[in-house]
Each structure stands twice: as C-alpha cells, then as structure tokens.
Image 1 (tube, helix red, strand yellow):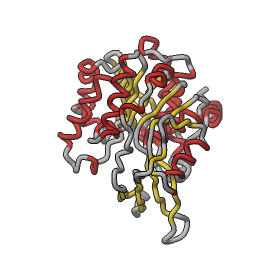
Image 2: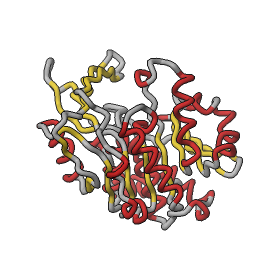
Image 3: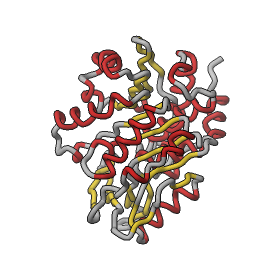
Image 4: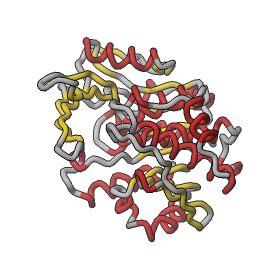
Length: 316
C-alpha cells in the first residue's frame, strides 16, 4: 500500500444543469486526495465509515470505482453519512449547508486502525476530522501518531471550514496544534495560514513542531513552499477555463504527494529542494486542471493528463 488517507467522506448535492435539479457528488478532502493519488497510479486505501444506506453505498462505490480500497468495515447500520447541499452565488462561489445524520462522526474507532496497514504505507494523509470531537477524531489522531512513530511520512491538509468551530479561530488554532507534532508535510491555504500565526511565522511553527515541509496554496497565483528555513514560490499554471474551484486543493495535494512517491521519496530525510519543486509544480498543474470541470472527483486529473499538460506547456 503506497498511500493511505483517513478522514470523513461527504456527499455534495451540486446544482444540476437545470433550475431546481441537483447532482450527487462524492467529496471530502481525504477521499478526494486518496482518489487523486490512485489516479496517479498509486495503490491507495481509505479509512472511513459511512451509513449502510443509499448514500453510504454510493460513497463506497465511488471509492471502489476509482481503485481506492476501503480499509475499515466501511458500512455500518447506524446512519453516519454527511451531506452537503450546495448552491452557487452570482460570482459562481459555492455556498454550503451541511445536513449531518445522527452520529455522523464517521463512527471509526481506534481498534479499526490496523498496524499492518500503517506499516505497509509510505505516506499517511489525514484531514480535519482529526480536529473535531468524537471517536473518529480520536482514531484519526491515533493513526497520525502511530504512523509517525513507525517512521512514515504524515501529511495533513487542514481544509479549514468556519462552521466547524463557529468562527472561533482561537479554538481552531488550538485544535490544529494538537496534531502538528505528528505532521511532516503540512498544507495550508491563504485562508488557513492564520492558524499557525500568519505566513511570516510558518518557519517558526515548522521548527517548533518538527514539520519538514509546509505548502501554502494560492489558487490561480500558484503556491509557496517552506523547506529548511527558506521559502520558494511557484507561479500559477495558465488554465483559462474555470468551471468550479471545488476539489482544486485536494487535486493539488493528492498529485503533490503522489509525485513524491513516484520519485521514490517516502522518507523525510530524502526530501530535496529540487524534488519538492517538481512535486509542487506537479500539484499546481493538477489543481489548475481540476477547476476546468464541474465537480470535485470528476475533475481530479490522471498522471497522463498532468504530464501531457507539462509537456505542452514546457518553457523553452
């Protein structure tokens, strides 16, 4: 198993092509990242649990169709599926309303996290489920801690949503600080960088928590990554068509992590500035391609599509 992701899965009810119509779309950052890694040719698994109902079976079906192996007993009788009803504003921005069924905290427990899975993987990726309360959050934190103890690279995508902490940034920051000691590769967006004290304090936070790499995504303006006390910038990829920004960050992160593994980098000590730059460019192209189509999972690019774009747009 090259890559394992752990966290919550959701169903988005996206606006359809006609007024009043909606399209089901599987989502959730950890699921999207696992699928992005699988589409880049990696053997990918996902720790998750959803309700044994139409919605839950749909979610698990999406994972399996995309060659991601559910690693835990994925379906349970207690309804645990999370749904997001989505509308678009005049500026084509998405507005979320979450409808969580009873017990929607994934219901994943620590005893379902298998040591042999963590031992076999090269990178463990975790999402913000680890920051909330409940048994699944505890299980996710345990998986991060255990993978870290086993010497695996641990990646963390903050994927901050205001509603999780009711706009209490102090509580959000405190939650993030509980997992950072186990994180090797950290992804933040410009909206999330405040949780480590602002961009100017990223190097300090990295030194404090032993984080090897932090990637700050900037949407169409590219990305900045921090490594060994220095910061490096990557320009945005020129992709004109923008249908929906959903999943762009997940596509970036999945492709970035995949590129490291494709290059044979599964240990922190093997990270180099050159390989990191290649991986950030690779992720940046993937994120840019993802926004050209509507729907997070449908738009996650394959390795062939990313490499084709790089070939066609290589600077002379």
